[in-house]
Image (cartoon, rainbow, N blue to C red):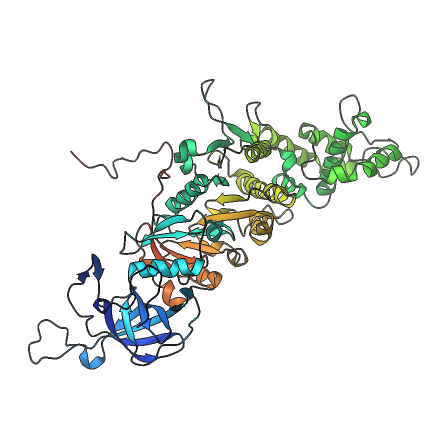
Length: 573
């Protein structure tokens, strides 16, 4: 028997003996479980001691290492299957249960180190013990090494006194995904992790699609993207995402110009308006760039001079002039000479009328007001983000999308543009000294989707790009979703740690198995049976997938303005 010098429970206590190994293969072993039919578990030193149950972690006493495994199956040989029937009294048959154990990792008993690999495969006859909770906690810590200011995420299943702590770098250093079906505890785990970031004076921007994280209270700065003030006494902060922060293709997806005539004229009109913002002397008395019969040289010279600024992200222009500027673009390419434009091109002019109507409709739309015509009380979200980064005392910025409309794909386009803006900040070095975590709830709504018509398609790829390259710039993701199958596998493959709550759908389970690289089919079958608040921690340098009862947040998310007690759940007095 080997004993470690570190302070932890002896992994090979006789009181926790389960049985001995009877068959060995590279990934699994079969073990005799002579006491598995005992009716009730025993107690020893204040801990519950079972005699072999599916899901339990075990320790196999090998020559120079303790091999960690998990019981995935228990069965009786066919000859013994009737021996457990209580009504049979003819004979004294003895049940001989057999357990199948999936090998997960090993602990070097001489150097107090654990790893996912199996240093030495168990042998026939090796003893198997029920893993002590304190030993399991040691195993986890031995894998990660010493961590500064670790985050307690929960406790091992069946051992409330055994807290499990993970290093902040394990959780957020290489992206984190919180997955789970509705009601499994996904939102609670997300809120808990955000609380822990705040406690450590980190920085997190939370995109809240439903508004349920309003419960964070004074822990966060709260802003509402869209919406209207209810009166002078309304103290809520409202923000906009002005149109100038959208890419050209985003604008095209909203306005949907036809490819023949409308798209080129819309592109020219946008360029002209951006040029006028930099060279206002080119405008006529009404503020437009009139090309009819105008000389080309001054305008082309100004376009060349300001080309980089015009094509830069967030180049400013006056969208209220867009519809008429489109019509001003509808001219003959040559007039009386090659150096001038000609008269109005009637075909183009008539073909752009419907586009101009859509432009005016979009500018006046209440759904698109946070983009095209924000009220004066709305702040620019990009300025709010910059101010948040500069404020050393602020840790959490919650952006509520509750009032942002779904019409015209507004919500998807704006969230994608926010992600693109954050990635641009990261590439410019904004998060080198203070790493940023961007938390995206209901992530499946904003990933692996294409919006717009067949001609004007926008691939929502901003958060996919953050997952792929943001880490090297100090920008990482916390993605929460109930539909992992709708998140691209190339995005999930960049995730370093998964917090997987109950997943019933087999396709969701398969996606997690393929993306994690650690979870396999034998462990995935447990996902459908996880209790509320229980999760499987996968990755994060952990030696094995860990079933943990997550610690609930102090501020539990819930939808605002929704009565918790209605005729559906009210108890009669």
